[in-house]
Image (cartoon, rainbow, N blue to C red; front, side):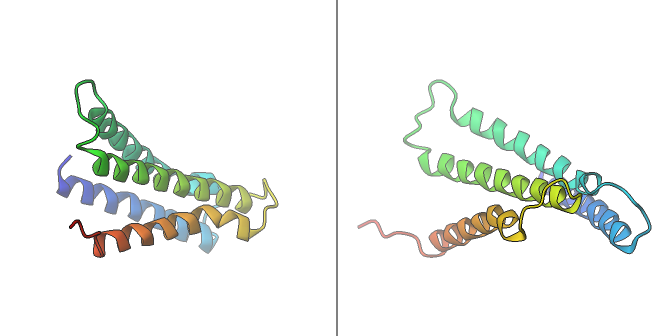
Length: 132
């Protein structure tokens, strides 16, 4: 998938999600919150599929994992971040639908974990380790 296609896909799913969210918050529709978040989950499923294919390509037979360790480590981080985001979205929808009575602090733990990891990743990219 080219960069232009990925950008277009991202904008399309974001537009659909925000439109559905505004309609729900405005009271125009009475849809389930899980249905409102459906574009987010479809987009995340596409990302998960693409990431899985790339990781499987890295782990194929005959490929030296020691040479690609930083790339594979980064892909594992992307996988963890995506799963944390999905966990946050599912628990948020469950709370909004009154399926669970979790406090908002507990619902936001996956989101905070993902954001903390993203800041660590950003810091590691901005200030690379010296190799003398």
